[in-house]
Length: 323
Image (cartoon, rainbow, N blue to C red; front, side, top):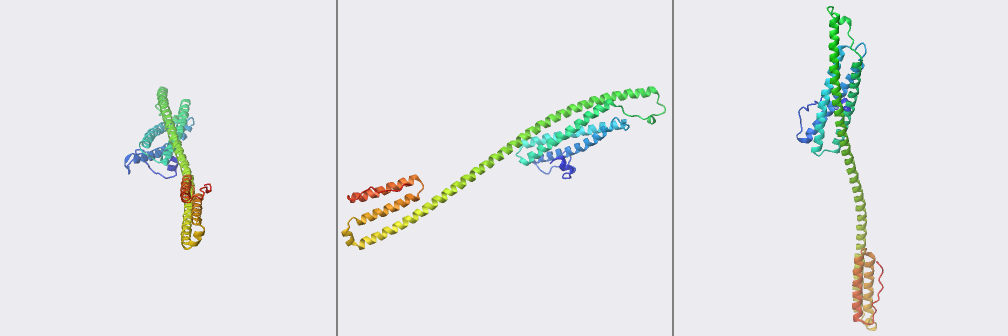
């Protein structure tokens, strides 16, 4: 929230003193302080515009003691508003450091600080112009406004008093300018600190986005790998089931064809070994992990060696496909 928002009518009549607080705790206090800063910046901006119009009248026929008195009162009013708003800005800054606040709140407070700094610079510029013009021009006093009993000595005494008052006013305004310079330096430090905080938040957001991108790629790759492994396992299960069926058929055929077994004594064992080799080969083609391939190779070799031990005439050199 900035004084432009206040000027548009979004916040009306927010007191600089804070008023009644609806919330409790540091977070609510920080929000109230931020609203007070926005209200103060708006009031200062309005008062500075009035002050500039009065300063532009200095040195003209309308430059009267009454005008200078109005300028002096307006200056004092703005200076008090600046002090109150500066205190509220410090409270908002401290509240942002004490509690966790959102990035939106920090950005809004940083914008308020920049708006406050901008209106302070405008007031400082008008102050310098007022000091120069008040020193260069004397207020216009009409002769009609002087009593008839005034003599030249009284007029001279009045002029001396006016010169003394002017000197005092100039000194007072110089002190006010020094105060404004200090406030501007303080606000610049706050703005720099908040800019660094906002940059850090943006950096953290960028890092989180990069992490999410990496996670998305990782999840996508793992999902494809898992789907591929599931497909191979299903295919291996189907091939194994078919092989078991073939073995059952071979066993039944072997029992019913005893005459064929007598004619070819090594036929039954060779067929069993051949079926095992086919099953193991299918499993090796479908598996994707090297450890699984090696275990199936060892199992197949052990089975082939066992068969050849019982039948010395058979060979154990069975070709296996590469994984």
